[in-house]
Length: 133
Image (cartoon, rainbow, N blue to C red; front, side, top):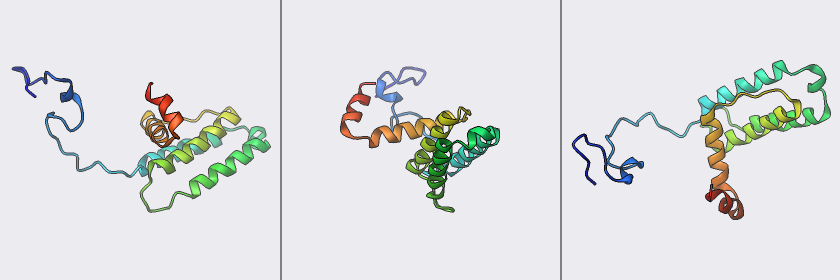
């Protein structure tokens, strides 16, 4: 692949990962989503702090809170947090948010990573539908 006088690639492949783009240090890249998990737990705590007592005591919210607690407990302390574990907690937290009407703040990188992971792990009929989007 060649570029013009400014070094701009003339082919689409120049914009893809692992292409002829200038190299830079990527040693800090890893598969640990622990920092994003900690931020998500902070958002969940804030959601419960602002939840009215009458909503928090409803049986559907209590049951959903129990499932959320189980998902959080399943993440092993001191180990790398992987996207599937992050996704399990996020899904349960969104369920509590939907049932209670209390907002949950989730950053776009976390929600995007979970959405991509879940779409790639979905059964074939769901992946077939998602591939055209």
